[in-house]
Image 1 (cartoon, rainbow, N blue to C red):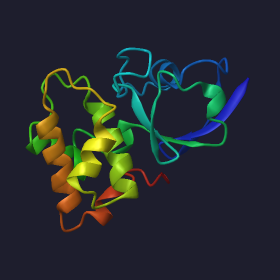
Image 2 (image 1 turned 135 degrees about the vertical axis):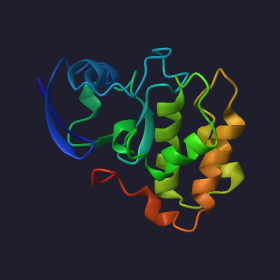
Image 3 (image 1 turned 120 degrees about the vertical axis):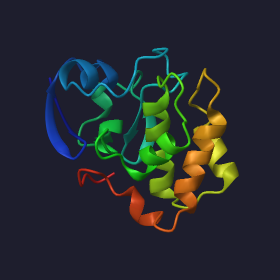
Image 4 (image 1 turned 60 degrees about the vertical axis):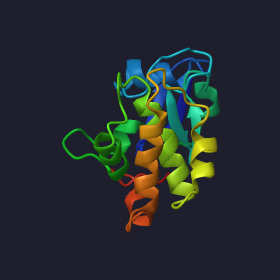
Length: 166
């Protein structure tokens, strides 16, 4: 079966079983390895991507749920050579220790900032709660998000790196 979906601004016609989790398609077929396999049950957030502007766990999101929809992955937020504003803030605040959760943290945070460019601390904390960091760098992650949210160009900083619509 073919599933038509836009991933990081590019139309894709994916040939896979409709029950296949999005995470497997991203990593194994499209070589988009930013989203990580953590728990496989939608409980840790390492696999978080943005689906139609909302964060979702790609390990439990089947391909069948994606027809005609738009997915953004961490690869769409910037690159090592040219990090996006949110990525630069994570680097500045040393938000990654082991780094395993960071792609999921970044995409969840981006989804929040896309909808609410200037969230309160409470909104940030509540929005980020589903994603876990076993290294305990939550305070650094929150500081990075807060910096972008309070920055002078916060509203303009959230445009997709590739021009994809979120």
